[in-house]
Image 1 (cartoon, helix red, strand yellow):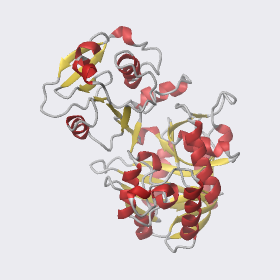
Image 2 (image 1 turned 120 degrees about the vertical axis):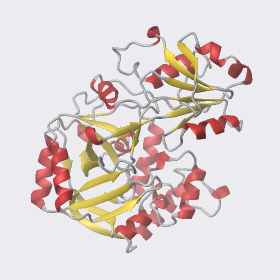
Image 3 (image 1 turned 45 degrees about the vertical axis):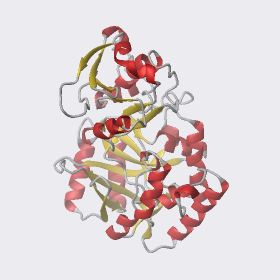
Image 4 (image 1 turned 90 degrees about the horizontal axis):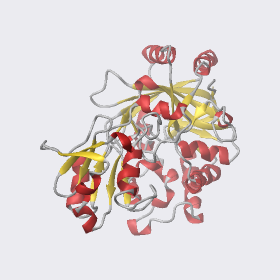
Length: 412
């Protein structure tokens, strides 16, 4: 059973114009603090002022330390200003229908139901039968940083993306029927051109009906926001902000890597990986972004190569080992390059908001030693890992489109 309670006191965009000003990517979608600072120059009223307060400074040189007393104080001040701004309004006892449409995919929007999920339903070693299944290890310091921000601002702004099976199709059908019958409360577009539309649902009968539909789901899978849900649990909160999406509407994009390697390692890279992979030079004119499971791209500064893992490199019955990111970590990072820790600073993880052409340019400009491109994890692989109670390899799923931060916030 999945519980999704209404938000008792919500802070929402007043209208579409306000949503344009407020909306922002989540804190973990950026490659660097400099990117956050630059976006704040373009959108000075965005919720990034609160979610990334150390970047809300006059110059890049002034960017502070995340989680410091000074930046937390800035978050509190910025939140106080936001609370009194006419861009936002309060809404009571609401769920919300949330639709995101990517350019070129107008016939298949991602649509879900937002509300408050229960921390006690999260599956942990102490709660092995929990119905909300995490699939990523939690870095305590990262979760603690989000917890501190939530605590000092008294606002939960970090929405967790939950996937549900919706085997009957009833959840998707009910959400689709609702948006056809009602005008959205507001809408906005993000930096990637995706349209975000929100319908605030306050009618008690509609709230109860949607809750009952979601409650029929046996499991939910954390697609984005493991640390955001962990932060709420750290604080002892009963709830965390979440949107439940039927898995049929969701898309996983590639999550690639740039790696810093020594000159002698790069010279021998292709021959070294042949121990674990079948290797073939890429014949196409464009940089290689694989689309099929177990087809991996490698750019060594001179050419792109197709790598296909040999059968002995992974156990296909182990859902986590079957993920290409895990194969790359074990057979290239560790075995060839000697980078045993996936959190090593020599690895830069690059989401699908940067393409293979950008990755190649990073190597050609001497900023990194090589690029590795991975096919997207499939939803079937993702859910199989969850149901085996395994952990996804770090930085292996990049769900698109991303939930917009700052459109609906829960006051706590």
